[in-house]
Every structure is written in C-alpha cells, then in structure tokens.
Image (cartoon, rainbow, N blue to C red; front, side):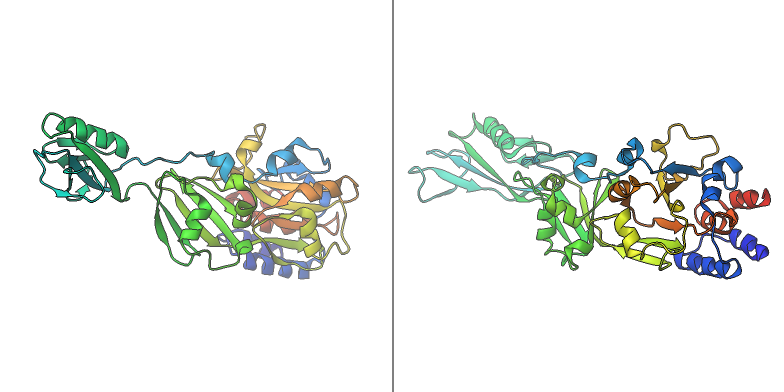
Length: 389
C-alpha cells in the first residue's frame, strides 16, 4: 500500500475525480484519514514543507476579514466617467459646411427651414486614418483623433473664415470604430458595442447582446481591461449598482457559464464534488450541503486552498509560491468552539476549495496530505517529504 501511495505522488497532476478515486482506494486499506494534530503539526514536523496553517477559531480574526471579500469591479477598476464623444482612428465622420449668401466656395442646395439663401454642402464621409488626420477641401489637413466633434467643427470653420462667406460647420460621427467594448460568451449574440457620452455600463453591454443564454444565478461575468481580468457573479452586479461600472474603450465583457464547486472528503456524509451558485457560499452552508459530520473529530475540519502570497508577509523561506503568486494554505476550524459557528457564517467558500474532515488523530498524515499535495505542490517536494517520514 505504501508503494502505491509513493508511486501515485510521482505522477503528474490529475483531475479532481482521479484524486477522489485514489483517496477512496486508500481508505479501503486504512479505514481512517489523517488526524487533526498531524495536519496542524505539518510545518513544524516537516511532513510537507511550504504549507501555511491558519486557525479560524476567532470570529473577529483580522485575517478572516482580509480574505473574505472577493475581487469586485468597483474596487479593482474604480468608477469610470463617460468617455465623451472623442474621435479615434478608424472612425468615420460626416461633415457639412454652410455658407451665407452669396456662396463663394461651396455650391450647395437651399435647405428648407434655413435662412433664405443659405447654402448647405454635405461632403463625402471622412475616414480617420492611422495619422489621425482628415483632409477637408479648402481647409487642409485637420487633426481629428483625440478631439471632440465640437473642436473639429471649430477648427474647420476657422480655416475657412477668410475663404468662405460666414462658414458654419457641423460634424457627426457616422461610424464609431474606436470607442467600443466587446461582449462575448454565454450571450444571445456577441456584439461590439459603440460607447457614447451616455456612459454604457456592463449591464448595458449584456442587454445589447440579447441577454445571457443561461439563468443569471449561473453566470459569472469577467471584465478584462488593460490586461487585468476580474470575475463576479452576474447576480452581484445586478444587486449592487456600484459594480455596474461604466465601460471604457477596449473593454471585453465575457459571460461565463461556470458553476462553482468545492470538494468534500473524509468523515462527512458524502465524499463528492459539490456545485454551488456563483453568488457565493459560506462554510456553514457548505457543511450543510455535505450532510454534516459523521464519526469525526470536531476539531479536525480543514479547508485546503491557494491564497495570495501578499496575505503572508511573514511566511518562511520554505513557503511554496506558485507562478501565480499564491501559496498553499490549510484553514483549521474547531467546531467545539461556539464562536466558530459565527466564523463559519462569514468565511466564504471559493471555487475548487477542498473541505476535509479528520476522523482519527492517530492516522498517518501522509495518507491524505501526500496525495493532496501531489496535485498542488511540485512532485519532488512530496517525494522528499515522504522519504523523511
């Protein structure tokens, strides 16, 4: 049996289902899992180096407060302001020039409802090229990119003042190609939505795409801006107006049908992957969905997850930090402590969390953590750890 465990820890990372199947096979050889004290002593006894162990007994723990909030749009990106009607490269402009009689430069047609004898001359559409300039007859090259329609109108009129008779200029954005946001994913139709001075928001973008193809409580919205991506449940964006932020040019809104899940292992009613809504789930709710504890050590409830390394400024040099800047963490919950139940109502379960409940303090730590670590820690670290015990 030991040879089986050592061989398994040398294999590449497996799917969660394979890990669960292996754990069930292990439990057939040893009817109990790792004990509470074994896990708590892991860093000191070097069973598996590089793992942080955090107690969640104190319901007012500052650490609990620091890890509870998930990233949100308002905090990550701030509140934007409407972009205004700034012209960009690739936009198409429609320009008309008006002259008071007698018309000197432009021979137009009399427009009903205007001053008698005034002439209006619509010009061909102007495409703003790579240079950001447009070329207007008798006015020359005009800077368009990065300017408003009013500024362009004033510039053209100033260039024509000594050439045309009392020139008046109107400019309109015929095609908005520069100031757009993209909406893709689980929506009726992916769209490239023009942004205007109105200030289109995330929900405006989803509405413009025809809405989501799945129920809102099953949809996660990802906003990507300037290389940064943040995900939130769609229901949270709907409930909290602060999260429905104004879009900026180049934003990508992705609607994802991505039901979250956590895995329960050990002395609980069911060892399984349990789905939960994108709106979130607390530890107390998760324990309820797992069916509660069986013949378990009530002080031996643990949550395994990756956390941001920035939350551990005092971590040791042996703490493992992966390529994403995260460290493996074991949260310990003592269900004999009454204050723990308040903590459980505040502690948010995250996608891919593993909840393990120990059922005997005398079991070998390597039986469980050795297999678990093989999915999150470099194989060589697990091999070294097991060889020392």
